[in-house]
Amino acid sequence: MKRSIRIAAMLQELSGRPSVLFNLQHFCDIYEISKATVSEDISLAALALSESDQGEIVTIPGPAGGVKFVPTISEEKAKEVQVRFCERLNDSGRILGGGFLYTSDIMYDVAFVRDLARIFVTKFKSLEANYVATVETKGIPLASMVAYMLNLPLVIIRREPKFSEGSTVSINYFSGPDQRVQKMSIAKRAVTFGSKAIVIDDFMRGGGSIKGIWEILEEFNIEAVATGLAIVSSTPTKKKIDSYLHLVTLNDVDDSSKTIDVLPNFSIF
Amino acid sequence: MKRSIRIAAMLQELSGRPSVLFNLQHFCDIYEISKATVSEDISLAALALSESDQGEIVTIPGPAGGVKFVPTISEEKAKEVQVRFCERLNDSGRILGGGFLYTSDIMYDVAFVRDLARIFVTKFKSLEANYVATVETKGIPLASMVAYMLNLPLVIIRREPKFSEGSTVSINYFSGPDQRVQKMSIAKRAVTFGSKAIVIDDFMRGGGSIKGIWEILEEFNIEAVATGLAIVSSTPTKKKIDSYLHLVTLNDVDDSSKTIDVLPNFSIF
Image 1 (tube, helix red, strand yellow):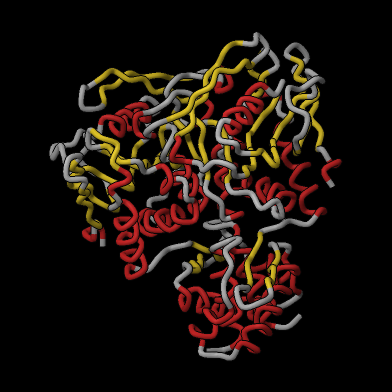
Image 2 (image 1 turned 30 degrees about the vertical axis):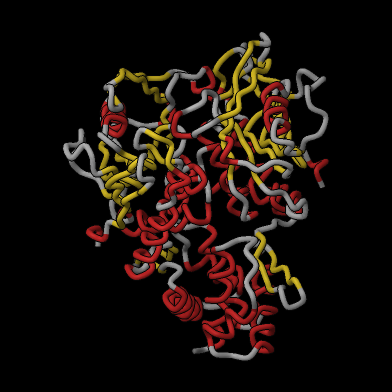
């Protein structure tokens, strides 16, 4: 097989299973080449990734080591994505009244969501988390993409316990401008005690829902090691949680003048 | 730049945006090479894909044409995925009683879900659909992956209308063994009249929910051109819908003997 074809094929296999460690021997066996040749090929594949800003190859040395693909994003490209996100949000047709914006079309545009996910992956890749957790529904495609890219199981917290989830643990929490009591439920089989989770959601205003996620994870002694949010409203300024990373800040939605003030959050870099 | 690096970089860009048509001029500009050279490189990239069973490159001729990556799967590999799916399901620890199985860990294992999605992509890629639709919650990661791979917007039908969805259309339908009345709601902004949708869900027993999805789409004159289901129960034999494609058949879950009978559906090939 031509070397150029082999390198492209190897990189496709790696990039189809992000954050999965491949032993070099795997490629020796498939392509009938030496480990030294595999190493050289991987170096060229890594160059191809950095040239096209598609991510990076991480090498873990030692007998239990190998190589893995992580779909990180450069600061320059990430900023472009954040600016594009603001441009898409800044459309008066999205205004629903009461300061709410229609965002489902963006949060369900999975190719775009993948770019958002790459920013979280770049920031959270070294946390050694065991899960990516979200609460249904609008953040699921984003959380699902982050889970895929970090090779972690996705945990979807439900609003109501379902029979198909088996035994569940539920909590009540306060959320929304009117501090309404809401419920969250997690399947006992979905998680193990004493692990770590990355929390992902599409939007945060006061932080009630995110605090709810942290609390239900605490029931299993699971630490929320990071929280990534696509959009955060600048009001109320006092949030129920103190630590999170967000991509854009929604400063204002003016129902009468039909204007939206949304800015990229470049302070994450 | 070395040719081998360029080919791998090109393929990464294509495969990061599945089903998006790239004009050849795009690559001429990036790499400062002629169209003839781009064409040759793309041919080698296509070989790399077929060697590693990672998908295919589709070429659309003409001035508005170009190339796109589609993550199709070979029949051989698809069958392996279906067999693996059955092996994972065939675990007595999953039995919840009442013939129900716990499957969330599989449906939320996004790397595995991606393999399931590739089978649907292979079957549905030529339907020229406008959307991928599902109903919350368990099928969302699967539907999200299919939408990403076909470069289509995802439409998530909700159980209850939400304020953040703007104006919605709701229907009532019958579902479940007890034929309970349930509700579904779709955002008017999420869809346009007279289009086509691919329906994806994780599980079907009698077909009530899927029929509900078809009906709510019909409210917008949207045709369900295909329905893809991960698991279909063999009972009841009479389903409420007549046309669907499923990956595995769940024949029996015996609560007392703790046995599960689940088989891959190879008739899709």
